[in-house]
Image (cartoon, rainbow, N blue to C red; front, top):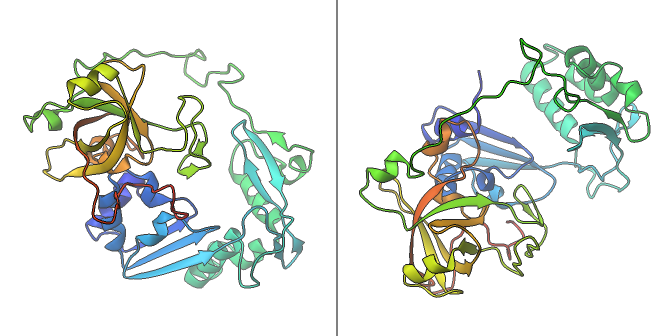
Length: 340
């Protein structure tokens, strides 16, 4: 009965959702139409960020706002029954225990499970479980997971093995959970045009069709470095990869800065400023830029029906870049800002 990400943005913007609680993450950066997401968050009565470190999402908040610092995986976690280990699944479907080794920076900090259990206990009491008893020993939580979720039988015993255990993937083992027990493939007709009907209805013809992508030194919204060795980019991220012929066709020069403006039928201007035009081996009429820097350009109505957090295709036009008086460009992520 809850909301996915884009439905949550709608609910906050319309006042149907009054409280936003983030268990980690960087919601305002990861979502489409960054400025509209910020407006939705500011419409809440209360926003709560449970975080290991600050990021830009902490800057967009409701009428009341809380930042609850919590342990990271590197912090020693002591509960009533002694030191605790959290369990995580990595990208290779391996589930393993993680034990912190560092003394927490404050005695007031709590772990994520302790914070959630405290909120649940204050709200629900001991219903439907004794929350505070569970958080005294994380093994108790894992026992409930083992009783509830397929693949986690004997969770606490299996996770003691060095390296943890393989959770498994049916497709990876060539087991097809279909009625025919065989892999089923489906073909879909390709669209005749990449230009959305909402773009066509404006009467404007996009200069380019842009996709968003990640760099080499990036994990979701976390940027570890400004170099992208995959594409030969050094020390910058506010770039647009464009066919050199398109750069010339549109009246610009390689290396010149330009504003990127997306086209949509709601008459809202979505713009990011000062992107360097990089000649690249890319089909004519196409362009690419980094996520989340171009998230402000993504019109959410185009992705809400997909129930996804980001979009890949944006019709856009280029405009001359004119820096503000203070040089502020107003992009989604200023990578010189530690909160980005």
